Image 1 (tube, one colour):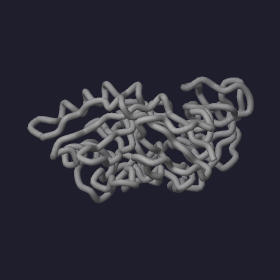
Image 2 (image 1 turned 135 degrees about the vertical axis):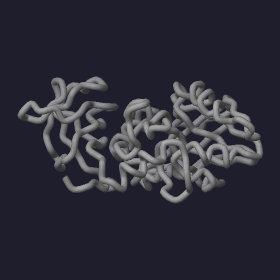
Image 3 (image 1 turned 120 degrees about the horizontal axis):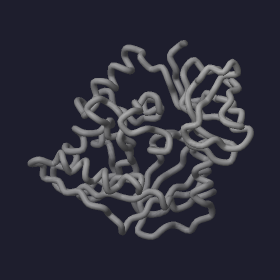
Image 4 (image 1 turned 180 degrees about the vertical axis):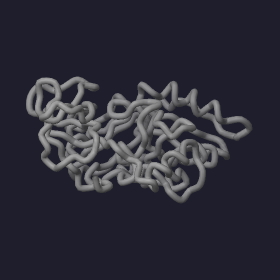
Length: 270
């Protein structure tokens, strides 16, 4: 029953009476649904609907807490702060809290935790004043999320380029289609309802040396299919042009990739 701290994540606190309404108008999901025992996965987009960051939203007494990539935390506070205007909200790092994850039946520790909202098999996430006893590593967690086909922020998406539906935000409960306007909503909705999606992140088995992020992925006839994103220990994600067949063999650097369609993925015919 593995659990581990996630040292590449950090926590941002939003306080003030306008905190929910402020964030609600900026991100892809309904942050009003965040409550004790329930986290919300959401993304911040450009006005043109391109990904900038994503994070998990937890609700604490008088605060919203964002479980975000540590490398993005400072810029995320800066980006969000530009939209405060007259809103009664304050944003600041919360270094007293750390992020942990557990899966495979590991019991959730006391404190601020919730099931990972993306997939029933993903386990739980928690924001804790002290890390729980670890019987796994962050690398073990990385293998777990790769096996499920779950994206990991900037390792799998490109700022100012990626659209949410490419990374499965629809099926993985990272978008609300009913909450009202948010920044980038128009392109996100148009991509869904007009069937404009041409590429997707697919989990791949890697036979051979792990290709670097950005390595082109080729069909057997040499036609380019996409590029490699994150990976570890024979598992990875690749951004591929559709259609992609289950078990399709592709070349990437000195490795062969076998694409897989995860159980949660819905794709337009192609």
